[in-house]
Length: 392
Length: 182
Image 1 (cartoon, each protein chain N blue to C red):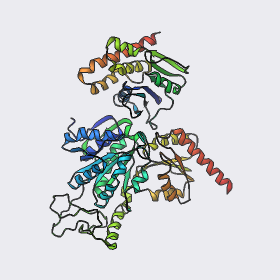
Image 2 (cartoon, helix red, strand yellow):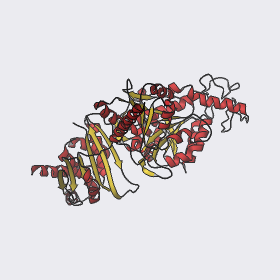
Image 3 (tube, helix red, strand yellow):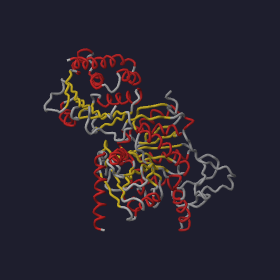
Image 4 (spheres, chains in turn orange, yellow):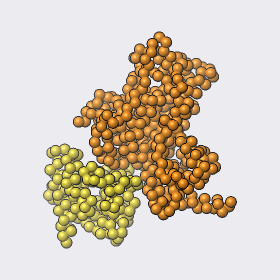
């Protein structure tokens, strides 16, 4: 039955469709968006499926309006999302900041394509990873998730919504064209097996309620519009009541809370998978579709007796700082294949603080690395380590 | 079965990507196999050289693309010129004899079949050319059963068009069978 939100069973679908199915399965009932290759199939699937499950799909006039509609829908009580690619992601930046400061739970999917500008509409890139981290103005923390297969597009979109609802903030799904357009078997579990987190609602007296007063979690308990609690939703710096406060003290209190709500809960947010890290000389650090050639390269290299492990970052932001710092003391080098000219590799390099070599394997975009290119990158790193030892 | 790389190529609008998806779904859903299908195409909806990769394996598939295909299908001369050199030595290259001429020597088993002409003669609708190709392809390559392809067609094709697709699949299987007989 197409009217059911959870299509339990096995499907041969692409990552974009799997993303939409994940959103529907976790309770997303609003989509505001503007079609753009290679993210269009997310919108198409939502347009077809949402009305049948009592949800709302709106094709907005552009991406600025799309994210604005999503923020509004979230305040109206809906689990809401949008999907886009580079050019649309750029347009969404200001309102992503509004979502962060108003603590609005929502999900933004970026199926990355080659850029800058219009770039390569139909081909892959991972060029927006730092834009995801820093693209809106002001200082903030963000959560970004990076799937490497259609099954992960399904699973991670569910997790993105659960994190958004838990921490009351926009969560980014940083996919790419290869993940979005690859068809593979996606197993959708029975509805009762899907973990669904719903935002906490205020329960006390509306008279004494202070919307932005929080406990040690730093996460506010906010009402939806119309719940009967007074609420002021503003992009201006605001106090516990939600009233604008144009002074350094209010800024410090609000900003500390917005930053700490992610930093203090990092362990709960971080998700990664590791392969053969124990005793590894070299660790490939990878995310998104780059995981796939990297895994195959790792297997081949290990068969050749090279002691290489792999760290697959399922969450890219916040960055797995402590893990990289710890590993840097044990391993000789990190190898980072990226479809850009060095973004996450910069974070790896920062956290390894010179204790381990960081070697970027760059791909300009339009495709992903071949396994052989990753193999060559690891071998190049071994040569670099060799000459470093000789110098010592 | 070892990990097998397949490249189906042709012109935008010939249904190459659809055929690749049907092949992948038959393997991944109706047989006990893993399959990954990817594609590369330009912004145009018609024309241009279209390529779709399918990887089929009993093992988990990491790298989703095909570098050196075991099986290559070219449905236009442009696709042949662009992709024929990719074929793995000893692989199988299938082309359509109406659309392509063999212009270079390939280190592979080369089969040219009159798939387009047969479809036009027996059915008269070029829209099922891709399904005829799929029939010929699995007839030659094995990989998945014709019944698995049929199961996918039954879920994807509107009832009114199912018979025509089934007929096209059979024509392709027959063309492959005749070739094998020689």
